[in-house]
Image (cartoon, rainbow, N blue to C red; front, side):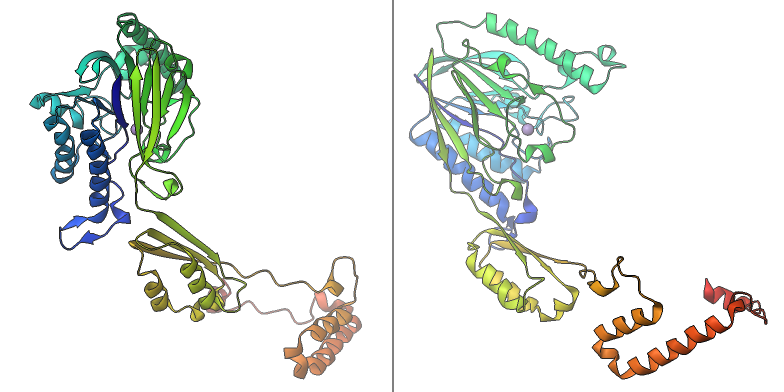
Length: 429
Ligand SMILES: [Mn+2]
């Protein structure tokens, strides 16, 4: 039996906007969070210990992480090398430079010849000796057309056609690897890909371009004892025989992952069987407080009550509230900042709602045909603020209406209007 720790989608160096500067270290606290969570994961691998660590890809947000971030990542994986635990680092879409051309952020480990570290940047099978015996790992990095097709082959084809042909090539190439597998030794497929049955997560928004989905039938095959995946950030088990598993991202990358547990997968793999367990890690909470105070008589008190009820201690918080423009003065933002202070970081996003349209007077609805004078009287009856003027207005209206009726030729006044002066014209525009 080979004990495997399978983790994926670390994205170290992302989400800095949700952190703050730690004055003691000079580092963004989100980098520190990611390093802490990764270190817990590596602790488990070293302490239990694991016979093999599989990383499913997407180490950093891009292929050129700042040295500081790369160093933080390397110092954790270095612990595996020191402990003599073989490690496979698979290349994800975020690790590739310029769509697969020009290497990947993880290739430095192969260049340096770090003992026990295998970089999976192409489709190939690695036979790895572990404390639990030999194991075969087929690495399937994020696939781009340039890996399996030449430029002339893709010319003039739509994205969908390219994806179809890419899938055909993948089917063939994977088949070639499968036929070379030793059936007596446990075999694992380690792939950074989207499957056609997975539930999407934040990875949708993080990557440019959609890529394509690999059919489950290509992955869930009896020649593999475990299919270790990366790319989708939501942990999920897509198949149990053999287990096809996304461990999900190690840390929450953004608010879309607020409700998801985060962690790694512990898999005990033998030829023909695998026992898989998801191990959650304590990661920082993302908390959204959404309050509608537009109808509230005491908006400030209601806002503070909503904040008091939310578990904001040390969390990354966003406060969304909707209010009417007339309520703006009732909001004491200093008090809001004080109430949110226990959060790790927070943002406040008020949104103004437009005033509800004035209610029409039922008496003046379309169905009621009123003469102009009655319409005015009905209107004035509903406008108490005009009560002082009502009598005069009705009198004025009555005289206007009477005048109009008595001079039917009002449409063509005897005295034509003078052309306005140029300056007046401008004003009229
Ligand atoms: Mn990915």
